[in-house]
Structure formats: structure tokens, C-alpha cells
Image (tube, rainbow, N blue to C red):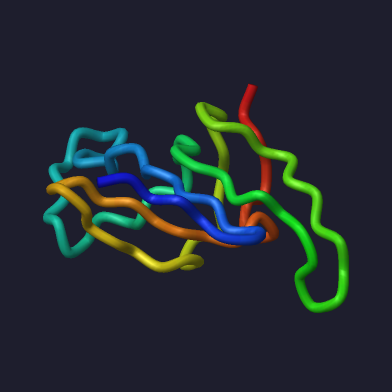
Length: 94
């Protein structure tokens, strides 16, 4: 099954959350923060959103930083993805 985002939406797959602190303390799943680094899996076509033309600036495969608690989490075929608006992507990591 594939995900095809609409308008200004982007599908990202988050990198694994940190399981230990820098000092070596192992974190439980409940205390791990949601990762902000992700890889773009699919990009919507852009178009008119709220009467404004939206141009897509990210591409499939880009490493990005997203807002901490933005988007909608979905699970498809055992994989977890997040669907965010392009405006929730803060930066592209090069």
C-alpha cells in the first residue's frame, strides 16, 4: 500500500528515538521524546490552499526537521509515518 498526500501535505518517516542519554542512562519508551528528524517519503502536488498558491520545496529522500508535535501519525503495513503540512517542516538537513 502506498500513501499519496494531497495539496501541501508531506509524508515523513521519523528517525529512531534516542534510547539512551549522552551519559548512558537508558530511557523507557514513555520518557523518549518524539524525534524531530525525518526522511521525506512522499510529497503532495501543492496547488491552491486557502486561496494562496503553494509551491512544494521538499523532495522525496530529503532529511528534514519537523515541528515537535505536528502532523498526524499513521501506521501502514507495520511502518509508522507522519503526515505534515509543508509549513510544519522547519528545515532541510544537508
